[in-house]
Length: 228
Image (cartoon, rainbow, N blue to C red; front, side, top):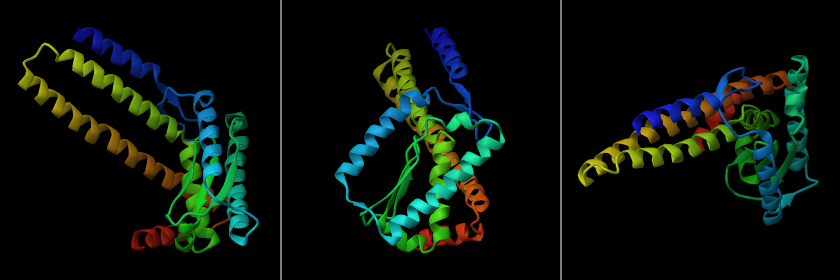
């Protein structure tokens, strides 16, 4: 049983390696755009229906203007590489939503939301660009699909570990499963998330700079986010 499990895991990992076209790095990802994007479109539409979208104001126009500049930069990058087709399924959209939370996000499909609560912290158009660049970077680097892949793999591994210890004494089962649960979370899921945030910071800084915004503004923004 153990040999079969190990062989399965190796084959699974090899089959799940995918080169991200923006970073050029191999990533653990077995969810393609054709699977992820329709779900994202549906969730985004449902979210907008359930929340108050701010339109035709200076702030909402600013969000759209900055968003278009950042995503145009990303498109120019892929066009320069002769690989613009990578973005063919993306459907960029930028909306400002009334919500007091200091938050903004971009779905894997390029659907973006800024909450009104983050605008005082963003403070300037360059601050918005820093946030926008960071969130667009998550979409370009396929972080959402990678996260889904990691969670799916963990569920599978949980099942396999459970099967492998089922004939062990109950006390030993509990110790093994407890150790595996802690190890897989600390060594797997948490560093995975930190790596994504660091990568999004770097890519976002590149995008906002090429789009014409001073990179220093990103440091000022994250300082305000930390102090708020």
